[in-house]
Length: 329
Image (cartoon, rainbow, N blue to C red; front, side, top):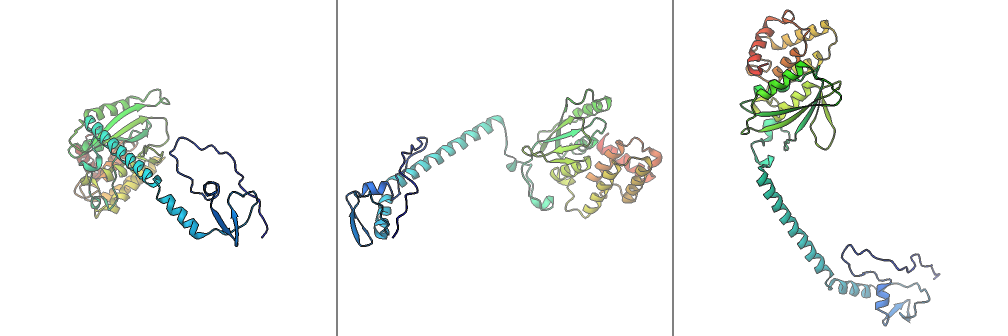
């Protein structure tokens, strides 16, 4: 047959010394020099392996190849790799034990094993993961009163630890925001209850937004949607996924979302009338018990100073008195 030139000439390649070495399993260079005294049968022609100056195309003997592979497997390379792997696994176990001691000394508990863990059926079948600290960016002109309302409403069930900071884009947050901070500080933090840490940053931003992931900037826009998120991770008494009034609560929160974006007083009054139709003769928007829908409505009405008592129906005025006893705002 015709001859082909060698595609990979024999270069002196310097192998890296940062990793352990394995013997060459190739049959080209290493096997040829190791079998210098052996004979290879190529197309019926017997030639000495020393005479390799002339390139001859030949078929490899599968029996010789199999014996060479078996010989390589019998060597100590495989055992060395296994031994090294066991050593690495042992070091990982020691590292895990050291991290456990550090966690114990700092008093850090694994969230999946504390009372923060709840079964999926209590949260609409959603898969629950350990809670991360969340960050809320808000403008002092649009104070998220829902944080204070939830903190007061959950004081015997759940702890929302809110810490406030001022961004460099804000020269002064104003008296209303300072009063809001003071009211947040008055609510005690109970370490015996499950807790979520919230960092509130006063910032020159258009919308109130929350970042729930420490690795990805995926904001949740709007105070109403923040209430929805906290309602799903908060105490089971305020989780409404399995409630018969689930759609009703979501509808009320949607009205609050539209109310906060109304630019005229007339459109605001229209939204208030829709809320009155939703309330009807109920004690609260979630039935006979306080729900996140009441938190959303109460916070939205506070943020709308243009809406006075004249714009509220008698049912809404009576509801606001009952809600004020819980939210304490």
